[in-house]
Length: 261
Length: 298
Image 1 (cartoon, rainbow over the protein chains, first blue to last red):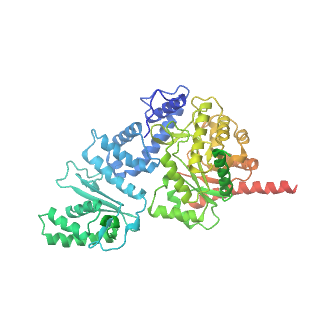
Image 2 (cartoon, chains in turn green, purple; image 1 turned 120 degrees about the horizontal axis):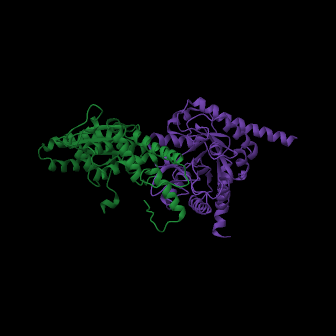
Image 3 (cartoon, each protein chain N blue to C red; image 1 turned 30 degrees about the vertical axis):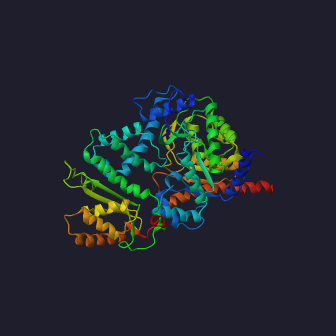
């Protein structure tokens, strides 16, 4: 975001920044001499409550499991310090997650992961539709599988999908929790925990430019020597078809002309 | 003809063409109202108002529902985050995205608040612009910049305010100076006039009289929260009060039957309650038309 620096500021800009500062951080900002304290308090209340309501509804589990005081402290600090760049209030929640990642002091390890997982749902909800013009077929084995852009895949240390008031994990799990959220064909959001092989396949699909489904699975047999290659080819092919049925993989395409050259 | 002159004439054509599509009484569209509005019979609502920030780039079911409604109803857009009076440069990428959105949905009028909502970042609510000559120049220049990029004339709304920092001009002089200087239209929020008249001790009727009627593109009515005898908070969370209906009645008599809509953002009642208020808007608009006819006959 654009940075406003003294001393180039006009007196109007200085007046406006001083007013906004009193709203963001009333305790640490000098009062405006010609604004009554109760009116400034009203502005603060209206603005802060708007942010608090937005974040509380975007992160219902996080809001529920944290002490109210802790939750409000996070929201207050965020509102005081963060310079939001999105014009869309709903998307402010994504900036809140980024902010938490950069300011983790004293927060339990699961907090940021839970925030990321709760944001995934809203993020998918707000996202534009996928561009289907690339898709030419549905042979996800012999052609190049096209992964939906409307998926969010996370590998968490904590089982954040199970967190609730009665279950707060004390220590990280020994194995990663690979969690997938995606937009289904009926526009609702799906959630599932995926095993290590499926997670690896999804990760490969995310960066895949030119390999067919079969080629991807063959590469996976190299990376997972602990499994029989035939098992990966067979199981992986079933997973690819299941992903296609679930709208996680949208279809297939052939090589672009430019790829062939 | 200068370049500016050419733009000017384009805007004039736009407004004449667009605003003629806009008449009667409408409703502010909220996501939670989508399903019910889709099932309404023709003629219950004459147009809808959409907050573009909440819809730009949205796909899925909501995106499709909005596009379907845009086929059925004339749309006006009421922006929230342009910060047209703000201290930082305008967000040009956002304005270009906005233009695409307005063009795609065939939006007949775009309005924003005579306010600012950002410092170094967005604060998502309306702060009071200092009523000064310096601010008139600043905000008018930015409105013109927005009109230039959007290639259309825009309407600017009188906002509710609870403090007037660094005030040198009266609110009415400030608004009129901006409208004149930017040569833009006015979105007259009748509720805001009432709210401000109580909070800042002036005569709402004189205020309406002092506005340039010819610039009014459309109007808002809304409910508010009376915190104390001398303080009203503009919440859009309650029924429209009698005093505001009376002021709307007066406004329709003075400025003619302009398109008007009900804003309701919180504590949403059942749709039939909202439609009663929309019909009350119509009542005051048509009463005005009947008066017109009588005057002409006389």
